[in-house]
Length: 315
Ligand SMILES: Nc1ncnc2c1ncn2[C@@H]1O[C@H](COP(=O)(O)OP(=O)(O)OP(=O)(O)O)[C@@H](O)[C@H]1O
Image 1 (cartoon, helix red, strand yellow):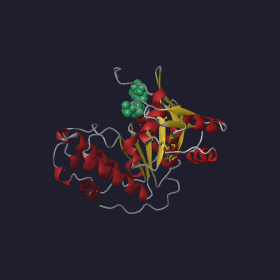
Image 2 (cartoon, protein in one colour):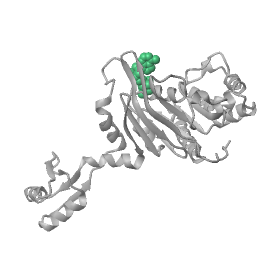
Image 3 (cartoon, helix red, strand yellow):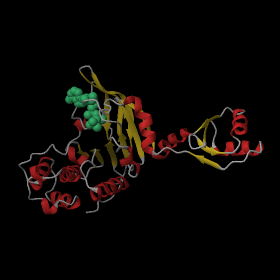
């Protein structure tokens, strides 16, 4: 079922302000401030243990911040009546009563939130679970549980949607479906915040990214701006006159590093300026290529010193 457009996007903003959450000696979230606006898919990125789930739970009022505050639509979520109409969330797909059928699970939530019963059939259809609606959730695969969790989030037709790692356990068709759904929900004017520990998952989905590591904000910007961070990798240059090029570029502070494949990596100057300086010094160039990092590489570089659990360490 296609959603109707959401009118009037003003006030559908999530405002996170100086948010901190401590568990004993562990600071899960550390002075986070960011804003999530409607009409975009915002990727909420960070390595495992970065504090994404804790933040999402605080946005929803399920965890109490140690300090700081979160406003949804200008108010604390807890203060809003009929929760599912205001914000929908997929947090933990396993967090369902396994003995219930999918339809019974959704019906109970619809009832508790004052939503019409027809919404249950609509969302079952929308997430592709109509034919499994009579089955007990305990027998569902992780992918089916994710679909059910998404159905719960959509049930109240809310203007604000939060998804914690929604692509986990989905097959490639499921992944494409979720990506399209997220973009569609945003295009309807909703506020859509989606967490992931994999940049690659968000690369084709998010318009904005919020990157955190060890509970702290690392970046909050458009995907295009984030991508530019990869440009720090320098420019690949091939020339038969490396010494000449090195001294020509040194005049403007660039450094030239020799690579094993015979090329050089120039840092400190853009490709255009390198080309101009080489021309001026009459140095032939056989290659001049800016090296872009993939978004995944830019993300890894950015979060490298903020990873709580490195591979090999017990979690
Ligand atoms: N209830 C809790 N009690 C104690 N520590 C907790 C609790 N919940 C989270 N933490 C700790 O807070 C930190 C952040 O955890 P959180 O689950 O929010 O991270 P995350 O970014 O969602 O990671 P993941 O992708 O692994 O779920 C971790 O160190 C975690 O162990």
